[in-house]
Amino acid sequence: MKNFIEKYGIAILVLIGLFCQGIFHLLHNVSMGNYIAIIVAIIALLPTIFKIISDIVAGSFGVDVIALVGIIASLLLGEYTAGLIILLMLSGGEVLERYALSKAQDGISHLIKENPTQANVIDGEKEYILPINEVMVGTLILVKQHELIPLDGIVIKGESLVDEAKITGESVPVKKTKDSLVMSGSINTGSPLYIQTTKRDTESTYQNIIYLVEKAQKIKPNFIRMADRYSVVFTIITFIMAFGAYFFTGEWINALLVLVVATPCPLILAAPTAFASGISMLAKYGVIVQNPDALERLSKAEVFLFDKTGTLTYGTPKVHKIEIFDSKYSEEELMKMLFSIEKFSTHILSDSVTNYAKEKNINSYEIEDFCENLGEGVCGKINNKFIKCGKYTFVQNDLNAIEKEREDDSMYVYISMDGSVLGRISFLDEVRPSMKNFIVKLKNMAPIVALVSGDKKKRAEKIANLVGIDIVESDCSPEDKVKIVEKYLKIHHGVVMVGDGINDAPALVRSDVGIVMSSGSNNVATSNGSMVITGDNPEVILQAINITKRTLYIAQQSIFVGLGLSIILMFCGAFKLYTPVQGALMQEIIDVIVIVNALRVRTIKN
Image (cartoon, rainbow, N blue to C red; front, side):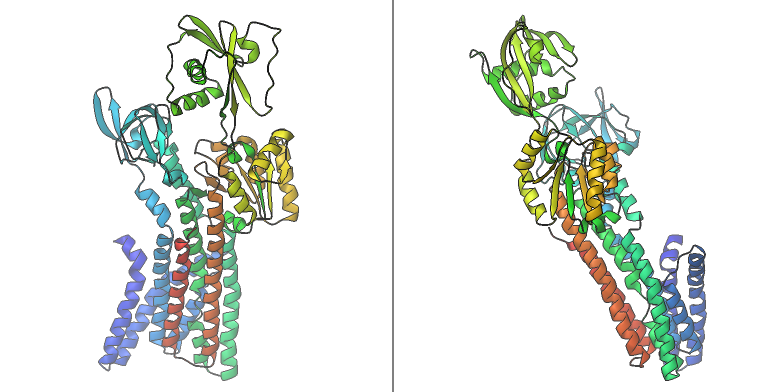
């Protein structure tokens, strides 16, 4: 009840005052109606006066001053109904603001509503439900068909398609099998999955997304601060016109007519509503805004700088080519031997081998006497045959043997049996298939698109050619990347850096907009980005650009159309073309128009 009174009490009181005044006027007891109007106005004015005083003490100048002067002037000039309508407009504007912002934040509200709250815990033969804040790391949980995955984890048993659209923006469900990573907030669309949790609820991907969006919506962007500055200018213009109207006509009622249409809700509501809507829209596409200023900056971006690994490419090596040196063995047999040993390894390529084997439905042999020489390779026995996998010098016995020609940008694993080299597998960090089309579209939006990479020149240029990037900066250290960002900052407005690694963090911070490609695990890079793409698809940047441009346009449109209409009405009021009550009602109509227009951000289509 207390919360309800705080939100709606003044508006309800003013409505009651207007109703009572109207009743007494109908009963031809105008004096009693006016007394009621004065009492209601004084009571309703007190919170506004205290708010204005506290704002001034805090160094903030609000446009509520115009409304306050308009209300007092109405009471002094005997226009009690107009005074109550202005009060209703002021208090109703706050209600309208809360409603508009709640609508603008539908995206985050939807996220919070669907936030997982409990998990099916498996303990031996027992299954029971536990609140997710009580589930510890390492707990085995069961996620059934159509259920939300409550916590980040690794699939221990089961195979299913998981819908990650809310997390990554990927519309196609992703196949998850044993050892696959799963993210909280995604939906299991198929068979049951047994998952071992890897994070507590407070550290989960879904909870982190909610936290980042809420944090962004609480920060006041520069554009909204700019709207606050407009309010000072608008207030000065309003009082100049009000006193001008009195000076030229000699009637205070003309000054009042200027004031009643000058309550600038366009400034108070338009920008926050539009920006909150924009942040929520971006969240729906898997783009989390950490700094709201990034919306304005991205909308005006002229330069896009891309890191290579994990951005233009997948970031993890994949099986590229299988070469057979001994014709007695097939490609499948070679991969079967490699998979059998590499699945026990801690090397970065072991995951690539495992994923390839799963895709091709390749089984494994039983391994005996497994061992690993860090940095060299792994070995073990298969059917009493000694198998080695790793560097060329590690797998073969002939120290004078010459290694075959290699591709500079590939990693190689050789396989030998009892000292005889059977073949080799090359691994390559592949370019994302849709990247070339994405770069073509991006070039139509920004004049400069460049690759900024730590790779050698030959490899960097090869990747750039594959995706259609003409400007290449290679052999870049983290410090070099910062210098390149600063070089473009001197001559261009809006420099965007897109990366995914720790070594990109300084450049991400230095750029106007740092966009981080993150699955939620790279906390160092994520914390330094203005925006975070929660999936691994950089193409959502195109959607983000369109949304930010439309958000800024609609915010500016709402402000200037609202102020323009108010100023037109102020001129009309100076020449007494309407009554105070009519003016107050017309201003309320303008406020509604502005809010409805700002909420159009929620309907942006990409």
